[in-house]
Image (cartoon, rainbow, N blue to C red; front, side):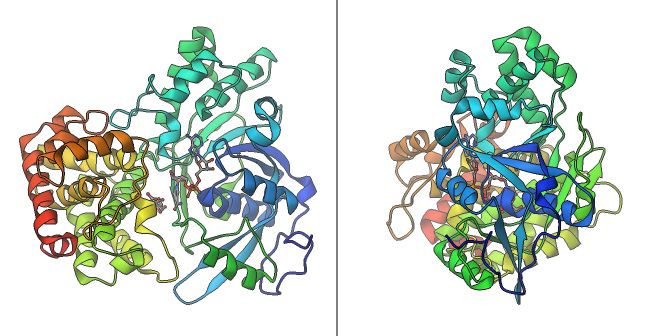
Length: 487
Ligand code: NAI
Ligand code: CS2
């Protein structure tokens, strides 16, 4: 069948200029979702375009995405990325993927065997916040997580990413092979440290010696990853077909901006991603915090309050002067004061750039998509800065409004009385708490009392309860638009 690998593409499409057969699967990536295709996949392709690189990627989806893997195989593992600016779009064909696997297509053992191949130097991940099976409030392994319980019982046929990594490292150790680096590329605060803590705790529960070997031999660099990559829609795929001249079911669209800051701590080598614009630094944590609080914190704020206000996309919220100002204030007054950045970092310029990126009308980034998994996102996007303001005695009304927006959203009913499709690993529990209270402000202390999301020093703090209650009451009385405008 005609596809991106055998069709003559439109002349404007940028294509790999290197011998793909020279690439080896030195990276195994868990999570062939939207983001990875437009970020690590593209960075790795650019390294091969600009240098003699043999770094290729074996792509794996552990949950869902079988069709995507099947389509990718049918087109020789090539796919396209459309970088959509406000005025124009650039399309690139990405050649860095060497092969792919899926448990339901290939079986679990094939994945473990691939991860145990001697040339594999890095196992990277974009598995969403919930993929770490960690308690959102503490970042520690949640031993009651059903995937963890199942994997501790049957470690050689794992389900979770942690289970696969630990089993593959066990096999490598038994075979006398060197370990690989585990690199998280998720929006998780101190993502490398969270991955390390969860993997070590899981491994030690299975086998203390294996845990100690992993601790001594494996590294878990932290990374700050940034590029807005909305889930592909039929419209995105239609646009990509026009740009390429052929259909690409694996195509993805994103903004032109991209950033990747990586802790340079790899046990078995790494691609020179700096050739493609990544930065290797000794300490990523300040950059991660800056991005999570300023970008993702205001994204979540706009997602809940925007959805409730009737805005389907982030760019729609930016056409409303009240939301635009509130988002900027959220960044500059609520989030930036809580950050400790290296000297010379211009947080105001960063905030202005973020507002410009959010305004990009070509990106149809749904508020509903960002609203997903709030129980996992709110603690790291708003919890740290909330704690900062409590300690300082300073104003945090934007954070309170964001949290109240989330509470109003998870009630499952919008301002017109229509149902909201709330997606969250804790959705059932959240819904049952909301149902006990109805749209009543008494729900605020009940939700703040969930310790897996809000540690007691935040959730039981009277100032927090009062501020969030007042924002919640305003959402009930005046609606989201008026509440945001009044901030
Ligand atoms: P997506 O929905 O397209 O892909 C999700 C991926 O996660 C899939 O590959 C799926 O197999 C995997 N997954 C889901 N649950 C899992 C679990 N429990 N264990 C293991 N794997 C699991 O989402 P997308 O856009 O690729 O985002 C994924 C993550 O990438 C985000 O959660 C975020 O942490 C990070 N990210 C996303 C950005 C974006 O703009 N889309 C930008 C920066 C980071
Ligand atoms: C968003 C992020 O879905 C979300 O929660 O806030 O995916 C955001 O688009 C990226 O972090 C941008 O780098």
